[in-house]
Image 1 (cartoon, rainbow, N blue to C red):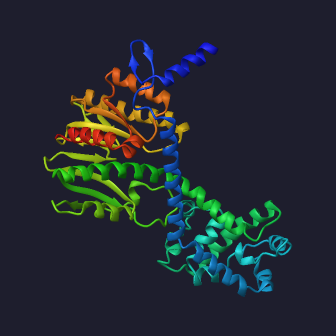
Image 2 (cartoon, rainbow, N blue to C red; image 1 turned 45 degrees about the horizontal axis):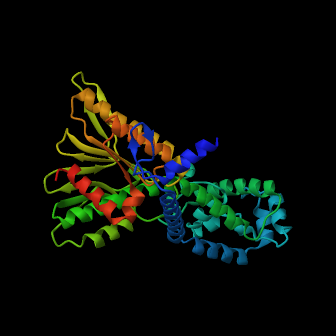
Image 3 (cartoon, rainbow, N blue to C red; image 1 turned 60 degrees about the horizontal axis):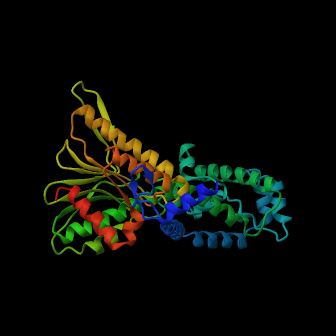
Length: 413
């Protein structure tokens, strides 16, 4: 056992190499410091996302409105109306008997509240631990009311009230006691849960955007960039996972030699830009998150969906890359597995349809030891052309330049 520990320590201390019958970590493997940097950057990105969502949803304003309603609330009227509002009077007693009595509007709503302040649908939906997606699924969609695009009718306001209050009844009584800030904790807890899917998509979008911005600026400086096609998600109002359908139509940004590209790309990022394509002066294109479908001579279809692909003609791929932006070391193996499956489909589709095999790359924010070793094996088996450590590219100018030079080559220059 002691000799094994000594061997592992010696391998970590030696320069990275791979081959000659002995396995050490490939040069693109993430160092412990790089993993810490990536985790820190990921945490900051997720925190910024949550802050932006809170800001755009004006949650402070919602709380102020609820507190104003609470100050005006007649407790006896609430008791009398409780059965019609779907409120169990036992839940009201629990609020009354708390160490500090809790105003009813903190937890329970009325149709009048939702009609006069449609945006409060967002507040009470979150207190009831419900998502926009599930509300739409049961035929009580709330997005239009939360954004004050329309005011709910009396019937809809009544249905929403009873539905929200019925769930909150159970939550209060199951808990057995409440606190003056319990309603805020419940709302934020639900928002955080709903943001889980969004944050995963946002992390991927951010990683893709980092590469596109680096590459676009590089190509622009060389006078090679013709246009950028993109879609905009818009404000951070929504709490659900973003899908392709959530984005608007394709928009195109034509690039002139004196274009202030950095300012333009910064502006687009404020609206959650999702890049779709970079077009170069030589006619080649970098397609981003695009589905391609090919058919062989017998008419059998093969679908591929690489994260990034350099297309020289309508049928030929020069390069394809799988990008994984997540920074959780525990998920690195799964990211690699997903990437290899996608790259495998590309190789199979090329083989079955008689197309030339493109150069293939794996790009990841972190590359843990086992993934690095397997990726190097793929390179030696001619299944993979290259691997890029995105954290290193972002923080090391030499690595960034090497990556940009390689990408320029993949794009036909």
